[in-house]
Length: 85
Image (cartoon, rainbow, N blue to C red; front, side, top):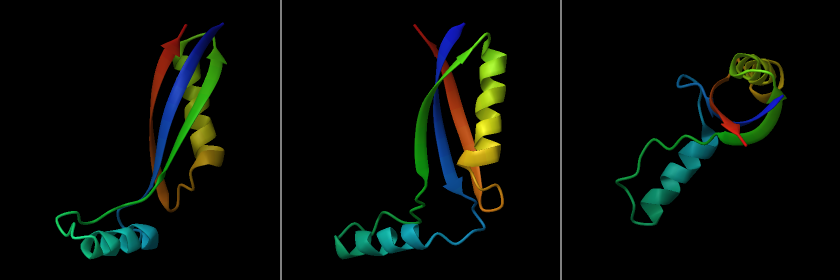
């Protein structure tokens, strides 16, 4: 059995309004940082998984994202998987 670390990013889909990101964008202007625009706020999830292979670990993380970690109607996700010692 191998141990893997998954770093998952879940973000609102581009066509979905992001009120939190919009509020932060407005605050950037108030701080004199008007060069920063179109802020999108999401979540980052880090988890460890035990699996026999990289393919199995990828499948398990993908399943966790689809079934629990991301709302596929409003969010998209991506992840990186690395084997750890």
